[in-house]
Amino acid sequence: MPILVLNSGSSSIKYRLFDMAQERTLAAGLVERIGEPLGHLRHEAFDDQGAHKLSESYPIADHRQGLRRVAELLLHPEIGVIADAGEITAVGHRVVHGGERFSQPTRIDAAVRAAIRDLIPLAPLHNPANLQGIEVATELFPQAPQVAVFDTAFHQTMPAVAYRYAIPRRFYDEQGVRVYGFHGISHLYVSKQAARRLGRPPTEVNVITAHLGNGCSITAVRGGQSVDTSMGFTPLAGLIMGTRSGDIDPALVIYLGAALGLSFAEIDRLLNKESGMLGLTGANDLRDIAQRQAAGDAEAALALAMYAYRLKKYIGAYTAVLGRVDALVFTAGVGENAAFVRAQACAGLEGLGIALDAARNAQAPRGQFSEIQAAGSAVKVFVIPTDEEQEIAQQTAAVLEMEG
Image: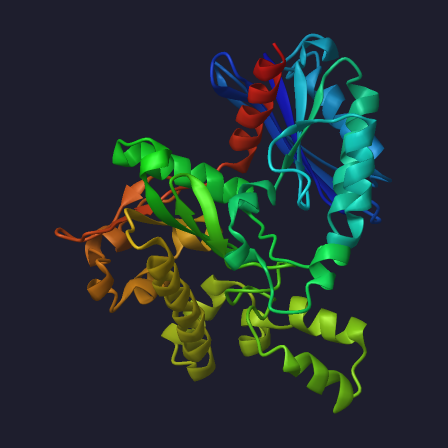
């Protein structure tokens, strides 16, 4: 039962076709720079002989053209992996914002599309692109059920003490102003993987999951459910990120507007696109910043220390929230590959039961599960590669099974 997973962005389409019966990837790729003068497509098809790679560059006018080309490649006479589009049993879509309405993967119909459209004010950069991917996929694969898997859904189990803001209730009642959290698909996937590595069901495990990429978030997971997370009403809150500031004094926004005359649009760009590691150092890639630190750059050293310090504070806070922590998980590009970030974030946390083995941490292989805590550490520390596409495929399959 091949399931196609789509992550449709504003100018890109990330895709992966799964053979759920054999639990393997049939094809995967990325269409990017849609709508720009020169677009790019990278495609891989997998069979018993290995991977067959293809790369193309030409103007890609819109998502319809990009996804139509993806369908052609899946059916290609030489490198195709299916004989007919009708073989695809379902299409699973990553949808960033489901608001309070969606807490589970959901079969898409006209009402669900309307609801995703209604939620555009909460995710103006993401939901329109997600919706466009749904509409194009429905045209190209009309026989296949379309399923929405929401990035915010995992965090709908948070209690009110964690998701409400201390502002007048009418803003929650009328505008839905609350903590929603993001990266939920990733946090769910790695928390389940952590429970499996611990040899216990997710309902019996407490885990702190740190998704560290260009965007960063950390989540407290109790018994398989999210009970608190660092991102808030938008993805701006919480940890220091590549270009986002993370937590700041909210009065800073008032100051930037009133004292410096910046518009709301300028402040939004400043905090989301020009801050974080980029604002501190002029670069947003931690690999470049680490090289500068090694060369004696004091600003780079301070930025990395701030990044790790903010992460450490959240680890401590979520240890208090959970009471008992069975595992701390690092995932995503930085979390999986930056041993120095893991080392700095965990330094001095022995009192909380968290102790790293320096050698195991430094030698953790890329792209693989690693266990990096020191002997005697009360808390396991894992590096777990995230796989949001696989989680979406599994949730999509679960919807089909429920429908019989």
